[in-house]
Amino acid sequence: MALEVKIPAVGESITEVEIGAWLKKEGEAVKADEPLVELVTDKATLELPAPAAGVLGKILIPSGQAKVGDVVAWLEEGAVAAPPPQPPASVEPPAPSQGGGAAAVAEPRVMPAAERILAQAGLSAAQVQPSGPGGRLLKEDAQRAAEAKSAPVPAPSPKPSPTIPLIPSAPGERKDDVVPMTPLRRRIAERLLSAKQNTAMLTTFNEADMGSVMELRKEYGEGFQKKYGMKLGFMSFFVKAVTQALQEIPQLNAEIQGANLVYHRYYDIGIAVGGGEGLVVPVIRDADRLSMAQIEATIADYGERVRSKKIKPEELMGGTFTITNGGIYGSLNSTPILNPPQVGILGMHAIVERPVAKGGQVVIRPMMNLALSYDHRVVDGREAVTFLKRVKELIENPVRLALEV
Picture 1 (cartoon, rainbow, N blue to C red):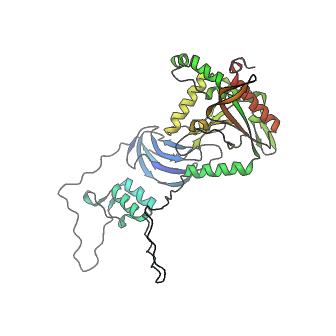
Picture 2: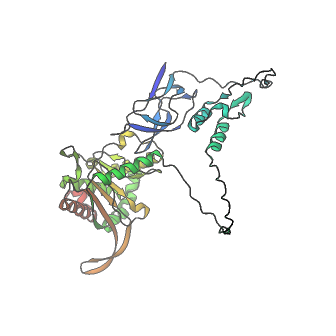
Picture 3: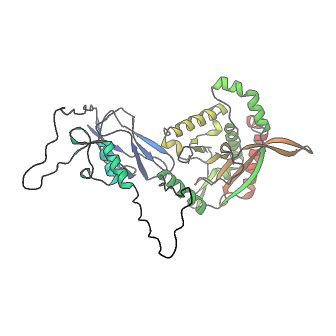
């Protein structure tokens, strides 16, 4: 039975995706839930799984844009892939006709992988010289033809002026590499620009002494790793601090819906994760109900699946507040951009030892700069500063996270 392979819903407000690389060829056997094709959205690159076991039939949309609900291919459920035909070794390609009229040229047999490449490059099989047995047009043939077509044609050298002597070029060539933006990068650019244009974004700053958290990690980190099989990181402390501060300052856990303000009474915290092509933001659901070990396990799982493109669309949806950590790249300060429709995002930064005043003395302490960007349409300066100060207090006195005071 032929099954439709459709583009599923992949996130809120996402109606189109970009068809990436096909991971299976036409006529190839697939297992149920085995990835068929990559789908590129504004949030991540995802894999579309096979709805059942069988054989991949006709690919209807080999590349380009597709809408949610579009049929991109057919799957023959329960079918078995036929072995590729083996041409007899002694068979020679038929000689061209010697008749008086023009000989009819047979269209070469095109392999599925080659057909996709030709379609993407806008070439026909008749334009490509096949090199496979029995006149088959192979993937390599199509790739060579596509590369030849896309190669830039060198511009003719300008003729020297008869009155102005030519100046020899300096050693070393100056050139630019022009690389098309990926669909994911284009969509990220659109969303970031939209966030800047459609919110009244403002950023407030503070700093936190990370000494107490670092001492806790040093004292209990080994025991934590033995019990839970993972390291105790900094992010779980900040997730706990943020969820507690959000309960006290609900304006940062809100969004605008039309003419209404919606205050969320649950705490779904987005964690910005680097995914190669750009940051994606998987969401920790009900973070206020999770232990630090559960938070660390969730973050580690998300990070691994983002890098391997195994993240699920629903895990990128929603979120009431976001935390981003530029400190892992060495950033000392930044103004993080909001992730609409959220109205708040906390930026963490690198921990640096520097002199600070403590008890009337100058001491060296491990300090982290904190930045809170917020939508001034919803959040006033008083709430923003109070929220960030509360996060600072909880981080500098992490016992408060356990006692919730």
